[in-house]
Image 1 (cartoon, rainbow, N blue to C red):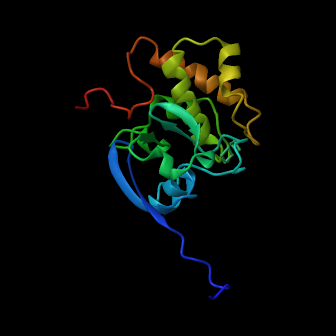
Image 2 (cartoon, rainbow, N blue to C red):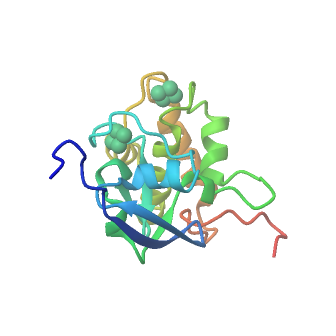
Image 3 (tube, helix red, strand yellow):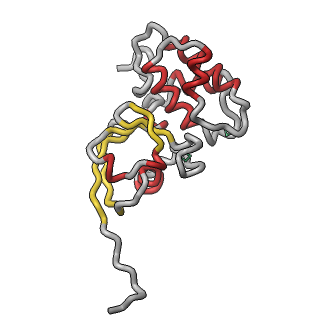
Length: 181
Ligand code: FES
Ligand code: FES
């Protein structure tokens, strides 16, 4: 037996809904959700920083809940719904209220951490539509930013909460500008 050639890695079919669309891929059992999104599905809006669950840059929503995609195996999300930052802006490119708040409140500089913060904020605001400053700080504390000093990020989340207040909009869903069908 040839001991130098490793056996080919078994591949597994995965089918999931990503940003409202059914997507399929054949992946090894150890493929990470972050790699499935970025490499197999070419959705590079999800960023990968530490790759071990610390920085939060890779945060996406899994059935509406925030998860670290670098700690999630792709095969484990078959049949489930994933939302990435690409799933937030309206079809015509109009930014989602949380994205706009980050822009208006200077909640980003290099932007590397931004998709993770935005996905975390969307899930948080769905649960806590009228948060106080301490609650926002606590909710965002699992994500790291090396540029902004966080003040703009916290202001952005507060601003988004104000804008969304009373609208009945679920911030985890794709933005629908007024007048859009
Ligand atoms: S890349 Fe996933 S937590 Fe840092
Ligand atoms: S904006 Fe650069 S890491 Fe947060």
